Image 1 (cartoon, one colour):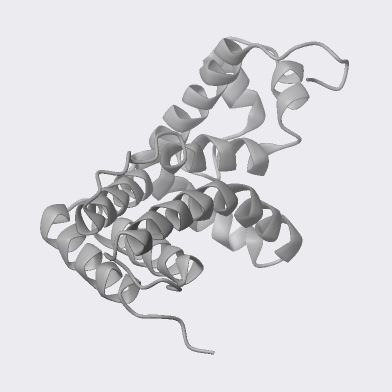
Image 2: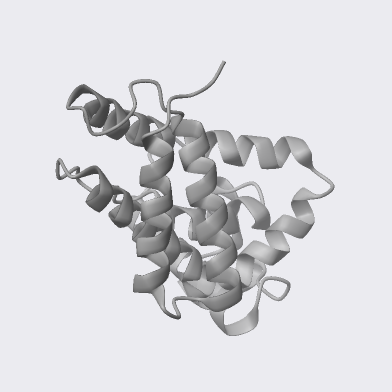
Length: 194
């Protein structure tokens, strides 16, 4: 719902997010403005501001939606599932819009820890819940430790793929993803220590 109580139009939301992604790729984070996004999307700026309070919130949704839309479907093979998650995170972080936006966002978060925390809470919760379910199922079938740390696996996954995407994009992605998935699999085999 918008502030006025009307229902949001998902098609318009998608149009604006796509315009933001395109401008991030073409012009970079600093030059991407709400006015420019509105022009590119063919809407008025008030339509954008009704949906997002400012540029940072719009850009966050435009780039972080890339790794939360389609979580991999569990296959029953934990190593293969972790490989699918690694590829998802790497591909999302290596998306040209994300590679353009993330350094600018990180710079802004330096001075606004609360905003960064809200972003992490919103983005991490569903992903960690899905990873926790995957690991719980693997533990029940004997393919992972019963008390392995889903949050640690998420942190390793997010950190490794984000750094790799920002520095190398998808260069040698298959080899990198297999190595990271193997490391995550080893972590999943290790019970958490008290």
